[in-house]
Image: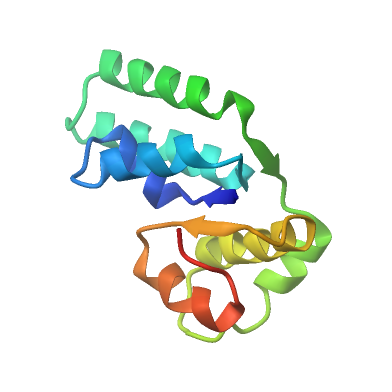
Length: 139
């Protein structure tokens, strides 16, 4: 099974939210893990934001970045291609949808052409509402 890991799942794991163990299990159980390069940027920005808000220390941020880098070293990442940008700019079944969420969904659709068994691991309700109408199974 191919697993598309969206940023909300990464952050849930890194910040030790209640579903962190389930996220880890899903990632570990996948044959292949894929994501958008957007996930890397969003994760880095979320950790910077958490540090600036005093939620984590600079040492925590570096440790979490290291954990993320180690975990995703074997993942495949898709940059925002022309076809992803074009699809992200069109309507989705459940609107309104933020631009970043549209990019994740468009990236997952692109991956589904390569890997028909792709499932999405996300905790973002805007993304989750669009999965079934788009034919993307939820992990």
